[in-house]
Length: 200
Image 1 (tube, rainbow, N blue to C red):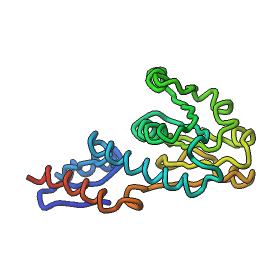
Image 2 (image 1 turned 90 degrees about the horizontal axis):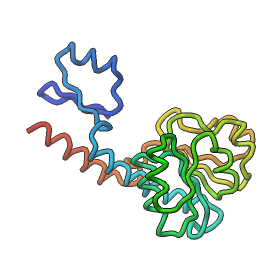
Image 3 (image 1 turned 45 degrees about the vertical axis):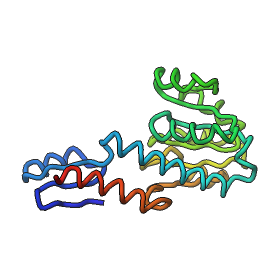
């Protein structure tokens, strides 16, 4: 979504540096939704709710008491973990930085670096990926159970080799834009508040 106000302000998401440079040269100030801390946390909540709804729908076992791996421990990963804990899910967390792993491990869940992703994912019921880098290569996917469900909520290119997943018969759902799909009214109100605050 891109909106241009009467005050030469443009609102949107994921502006490239090239676009920002061209806009500045044209006298247009850009406001990126995804660089606003409050807005991205609200977005993470809507994304986690939508992911949970999809997980309940597609998982062949109860979410309660199931086992899952969360890949990435940023806003969406943290929110997803917090939302799944009350279900008694046996969680594992994979995070790149030592700081994120230290934070993730405070509640006792097993924590893995990306180098150990295959071990972390080997025997869980589901995987939720939040990292926009293809970590689940064909070699990793070959070691997974055919009953596993992978839900990918990362931005493009996602975190899974889609062709390999299809060839191996791995159930994979790519779920972009969940806030606008599962809670469009709330998402619209959040964007409206963000824009009106800057249009004062």
